[in-house]
Length: 207
Image (cartoon, rainbow, N blue to C red; front, side):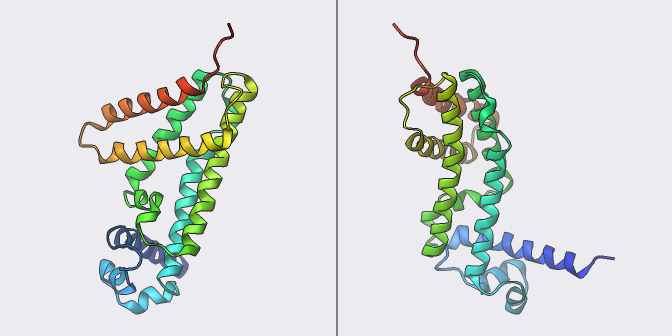
């Protein structure tokens, strides 16, 4: 027999998933509890039974997005790479992880470009903190490369981390939007983006 707690968890997830879809199409300001309830074919009261309001729902979604993206990054410890080639492999794995994540949850891409959703300041502030957290992970990879000598010593690691993350997220979005065969598009994008990154960051032999 299914426990009541299991049913509650399942219903919360249904509401979160429905909100994902609605807010991605309508934006936060134009979305109401009625839209979420209509998406699921349930009454307003059922939604309010699990969440206080739409802000409460969106906050839960943001927490889930942060958890999912963080998991992709944390699966690859920063100190593992010992050469430019190993760092290239790390970047490929992170890129593939982001593509697969957004492929499973297409609406997630909207939250990675949250400025288009009209979210409240308290929510966007949380997303900004999350992006800074992702940048800190990327900075750790860069510092590892600088310390081990396969990345340039003069890199501004924080600014470079922010730039690399922006490129990776944009590449993931473009790959998923393309109508060309997925594997071909991934290969072209990853080789182009990672080539640009590493050609500029890689240490150069002395004279």
